[in-house]
Length: 174
Image 1 (spheres, rainbow, N blue to C red):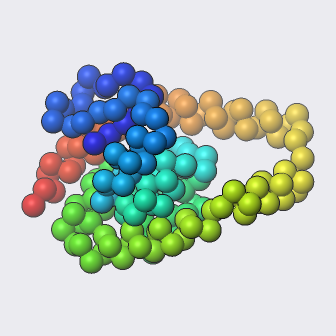
Image 2 (cartoon, rainbow, N blue to C red; image 1 turned 90 degrees about the horizontal axis):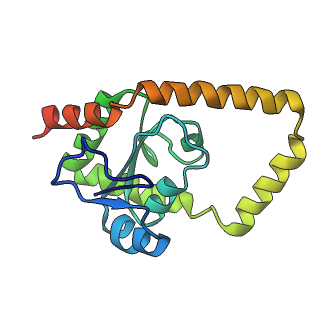
Image 3 (cartoon, rainbow, N blue to C red; image 1 turned 90 degrees about the vertical axis):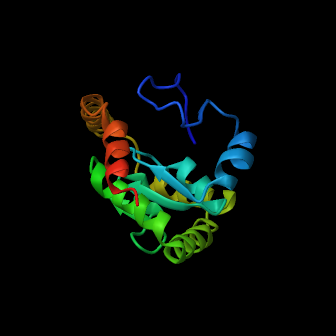
C-alpha cells in the first residue's frame, strides 16, 4: 500500500494499492494501523508527520536521514535509517524487517513509545522555544530558500528513486 497527493505514478505496478490524498481518518484506520512496516524514502522532510503517525500506530519505520527524521528515527533503536538516495540500503532494511519479526516488533514498540512524547503541549513548547531562540532575518531566509531550491533540484534528478528501491527489493526477496 502506498499513498501520495498526486495521481498514481505510471511506473507503479498494478498490484500495489495506491491511495491519492487519503483523509486523516482513513490514513490512521486503513493504512497506518494495518501496516507492519512504514517506508519513508524522502530526500527531505520537515518534522515527518506521516512517519510519526505510522510509528504511533505501531508500524516499524524504515527511513532516510532526511533532516526531520533525526528527531525520532534512531538507527536500530526506533527504526532503520539509510542515507538519502541509498535505495539498496532501504531495500535491505525492509527485507530485514520482513524476515526478522523480533527486530520488527522491537523497533515498532520502541518507536511507538518514543513518539508518544510528542503531545500538542510538548510540541508547542518546543516550537515556542525554537522561535524565540532563532529570530528571522533576511539573510537566514535567503539561505533557507537557496537550500530548498538545491534540494528540489536533487529530488528532480532522482525521479527514478522509487523504481530503484522496488528493483532492489525484488533482488533481495527471499
